[in-house]
Image 1 (cartoon, rainbow, N blue to C red):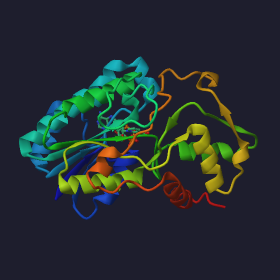
Image 2: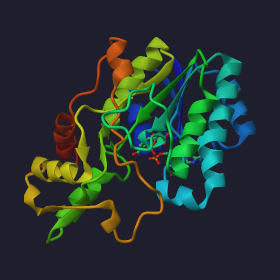
Image 3: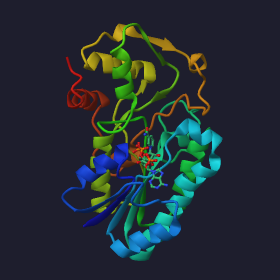
Image 4: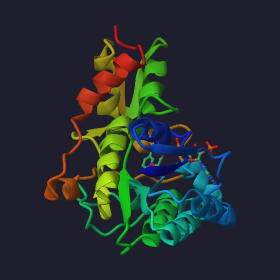
Length: 283
Ligand SMILES: NC(=O)c1ccc[n+]([C@@H]2O[C@H](COP(=O)([O-])OP(=O)(O)OC[C@H]3O[C@@H](n4cnc5c(N)ncnc54)[C@H](OP(=O)(O)O)[C@@H]3O)[C@@H](O)[C@H]2O)c1
């Protein structure tokens, strides 16, 4: 199977390149393929004629999106239109990523794939726009992930470890609840969906829900530190305040995987322990 991966230098993209290694992989980073350029996208995909496209390119700077909505729409919604147009021309299956930030966070309990989205941020709205480009496409899959962590790129596990290396206490919000997604686990799940050409919308996150405060405590615990150093704060206490509002509850239930008899991802603590070892942060 020939697989084109866009955003191949990103946090998820790099794990995808690893997990598809047994296939004929074409890894396109930002400098190789600008997904907002329709001609470039059509040229690349009709030239390569991949069997599958895994579209991991996106503008993920949630706060910066608030001040440049045009760039957010272009990168996170219009680019999906271009990639979908090209994939349809060559009959390639397309998988694209979306986010828990499509929800407003007011639901009590986890969100399933069939809950109505209502994004609160420009980033969330632009990613929902990308989802809608693929709605009803029989050869497209949308994978919503959340709170992504992994070996590559910057993420909260690395941030927490960096802060923990300094003396003093650490403050993390205790009023935003979600599910971590370890990029390697998500990539493995996406591999299964792509090989099966399973269409539709899937939540793909690790098991176990936490607030950022609880997650920071887990990171300290897993790395042999003292979880008691982490203090809970409210989002309103963040200095400086974040421009993009976040949902208070963005726990994603991986219901479509479970109800399709597909394996759900491991509990986050198992994957966190593995990542801590990979990062050389275990004591
Ligand atoms: N990270 C999270 O917590 C999270 C949560 C939910 C959903 N997601 C979604 O998961 C997917 C993968 O995210 P990620 O965590 O891997 O993000 P990432 O590390 O920021 O990777 C995204 C990649 O896309 C590239 N890119 C940006 N604009 C592009 C363009 N116009 N053309 C081609 N490439 C472009 C970026 O390159 P540059 O660095 O050069 O800009 C970067 O390498 C995205 O769809 C994201 O929205 C992520």
